[in-house]
Each structure stands twice: as C-alpha cells, then as structure tokens.
Amino acid sequence: MRTVFLLLSFLPAMLSAQLLSDELPQGVTKRLLLAHPTKSTITVIHTLQQEGLLNLEAIELIGVYHVHETYDYSKSQLLLDSLTTLNMQLIPLNDTLMVSNLYTANACSDAFEELFTKSAGAFFFGGPDIPPVLYGEQPHPRTKVTDPFRHYFEASFLFHLLGGRQNTKHTAYLKKKPDYFVHGFCLGMQTMNVATGGTMIQDIPSEVYHSDETAGLGHLPKEQIHRNYYAQLKDQCCDVQGSHFHSIRFKGKKLAKKVGATRTLQPQVNSYHHQAVKKTGKGFKVGATSQDKKVVEAIWHKKYANVFAVQFHPERSELYLPTREYSFEPQGEQKQLSEWMDKESMDFHRGYWVAVNGIIRGL
Image 1 (cartoon, rainbow, N blue to C red):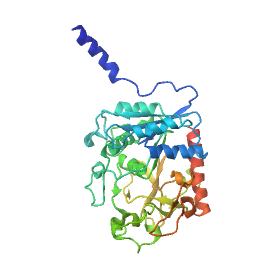
Image 2: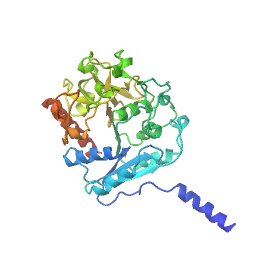
Image 3: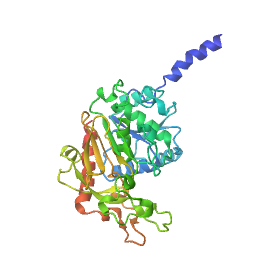
Image 4: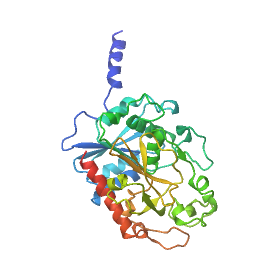
C-alpha cells in the first residue's frame, strides 16, 4: 500500500510539470513562440536577425510543436546547437488532440494557457493545406493534407488564443492580454482564419479563375497567378521556382499603417499558395487583396491590435540574404529573388520588418 500511495502522490506532480519556468532567464525580457520550428523556420528567423531586420536582443524564442507532427525535429535541434547567436529552445506537446475537441477545452488546453501566459507573442508560418474538416467542408480534388497533427495543434492553439464562432462560450486568452502579438504568414494566416470560424477557397485556379494549373495557366495574367504553375506540371523537367510574384492593394489604411506602408502603395510580393480565405473568421477584417480583389492577401483583428497576418511571404530568407538565382519558367532568365522585384517593393519588405520589429520591442 505504501508503494501505491507514493506513486499516486507523485502522479499529480508529473501531470502539472511546467513547460517553462515562471521567471524569465537572466538577461531575457520576453519570450516569443514559434510554431512548427523546422530547420527552415529557424533559418528564416536567424537570417532576419543577422540582417538586422529582427532585433532579438533579450528575447528567448520557444519553438513549439506536437509530437505527432510528421517533421523530424531532431534536425531543428542540431541546427540550434550550431547557432550561437539564437537564444531558442524546443518544447514538444504530446497530449491527445482530435478533430472533435480542437475548439473546446482539451488535453492541451493547460499547456496552451501556460505558453500564452509566459510569452509576449507567437509566429505561425507557411505550410501545406489545412484539413477541410476543420472548417466543415469536404476536400477539393486539389487539396492535399500531409501533416494533420500540425494543423490540429496550430488551429486549436489559435482558437484558444483568439476565440471563434465554433464555441462562443470559450473566453479568448487574449482578453487577459489584449496587446499580445500573433502574426502569421501564408498557412499561418489561413489557420488564424479557420481557427476563428472562417472558411477557405480550397483551390484558387479552379474556384476563382475556372482553370486548372496542372494543365498550365499561361493564358492568365500575372496578377491572377498565386504560385508558379510551371512547377505544378507533372511532365516539367526543368528546375523552376515554385513561388510567383504579383502585386497587392491595401484595403483601407489600418493594416498599411501597421506594416509601415501607405494605403496607396501596391507592392509586389512573393506568393506560394493555391488556397485562400473565403469567409473571414470572427473578429477579422480584410486588410489587403490581390489586384482584382478576388484573393485575400492580409487580415487584421478588430479587437486585438497586434494580431494580423499576410498571405504572402515577407519572411523569405532569400529576399534579404541571396544564396542563388531563380528562374520562373523553363529555360527562363535567372536572377536573385530580390532582383525580380522593383526597388519600391523591396523597400516595402524591409519596412515591413522594421514595423513588425517595432511592435515586438514595444510588447
């Protein structure tokens, strides 16, 4: 009986073990979370830091993920071990997540709340298609879900942070800290939208432009192409860049001002997606669109000033630290990624990070 008592006494302590210390480490003033902290994600953050676009002085980065994601995070740890200038640790969550309990209290809720309480903000990055079941739809033939637990984790965490139409009884964590920073890129924006009750266009070419990119979209103008259709051709033998460039237009001045731009600016952006926001989630407004206004390119939250996201990729490392040249069509001209944009657009991208960095430093 004594042994049983000792085991039962020890179990609550195990269950309540903290993910992070209550007090910040010496020299650290705030923590920022990075969801899906792959080698690529870490490289992006490190590049922004090295190029002076993201000031991480006195900031501890916490990479968070679910253990059932398909990515091998030992690769991330090996990279972190080699980076002396990045103060970052990885934290896996292993509690059960199911489609049926993502938008309510679940086994990860306590961990979500602790991560929120002990951090100042969170980044959510690009990636593959969200399972349509998370927004109540059947999959389109072009939808490809490759890592469901990543989506379960990120959608549930964002729901806990922001609340959503799926469960109006839930009190959003940000009500306790309205200035908390939440920012997403591409999939990150889509997940923020879905987590708050929004829906998705599952395939822009077929649903918006009534075409099929795997058959080639050469008849479409540049502004209607959101990823490089050459890269989607099954018989394509040539190495072409999977992304594409097109310009955006801001809707109103709210988001433009937040990212250091003017409302009338129409910068070129790097785009790599075939899905897009359809119905916006609870609390969100459209901040930018494609030139024809058919594709949402940015959203911002009406209630929480530091919650916003973009569909394009201002975080892409090669824009600021060129490593190679890229072609966008077979046997086409090759240039560094930044050279495919005009100076005004590159200035926008750098100014974007100045603005984001200013928000983070003010948290």
